[in-house]
Length: 219
Image 1 (tube, rainbow, N blue to C red):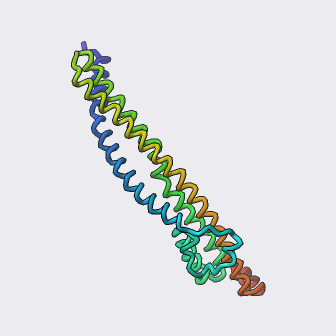
Image 2 (spheres, rainbow, N blue to C red):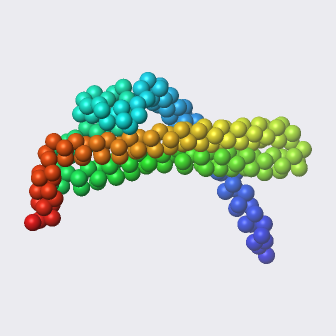
Image 3 (cartoon, rainbow, N blue to C red):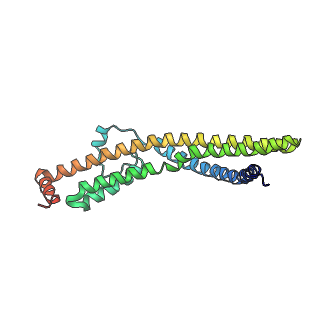
């Protein structure tokens, strides 16, 4: 009679053993990815360190249609260029277009954090998988008195743990810092949007603003 329990145990053991090398491969890929991301992160950090800190009052006195490369990040400058184009070509719908542009840019910035947020969980998870699989085979080798196999399995188990935790910690730091950058960029974009709208209203006068509102309502 077939021992179903032993068959299932053997099946799970085989599946678990087969997952070891894909796990190590994924950890290696993540190490390369986090190193490449570290380079881009350092580059962005250096660029932001060169920015001059200005208050909202100082920024409101500047010509925001000019060069703001010394006070705004490239995310904000890209949004400002698109906002100016929307204001010039939007006509009566420019306020709606500007609001939609702000929402799209904000969503794009938050979406850029998805991969980093995933690594916070995936890195340690893969490290734990890479730890437990060799521990199982190592214990089996210990039962057979094979100390060399046990030692090699323990080396794999501990190294995958360290690599997985290192990936998770680095990803958390990058996520925390970039989240703060994005929050500041979105706040600056919202402020610039208000300045653009106010400047357009000032140039055109209250009568032109009233006519634009009437046109947007279809009157």
